[in-house]
Image 1 (tube, rainbow, N blue to C red):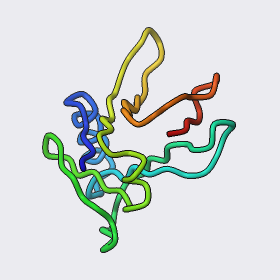
Image 2 (image 1 turned 180 degrees about the vertical axis):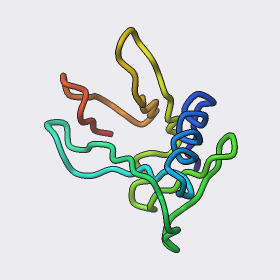
Image 3 (image 1 turned 30 degrees about the horizontal axis):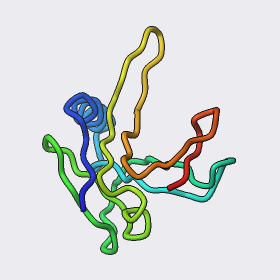
Length: 107
């Protein structure tokens, strides 16, 4: 079981943490939401939670809880720039379908 960051995502997160002046990494999870059932949640980690599972990619720590890991196993978090838009993309091999707006998914 694993979560990874692309090199671009790791550089972006690392630079943001340095600019922020604190943080151990990012926490990736899922929550019940949207028309397809689940949505991603992404937040910075300032304090390690003893119940979290920790992974590392390109020197950046990724945390998740055991419940979310069941839905996220194998996911790569990428950072993309397309024209004027930029942001994170979740490359999750477990997704069966997504809603039309792209805010939620199911497995």
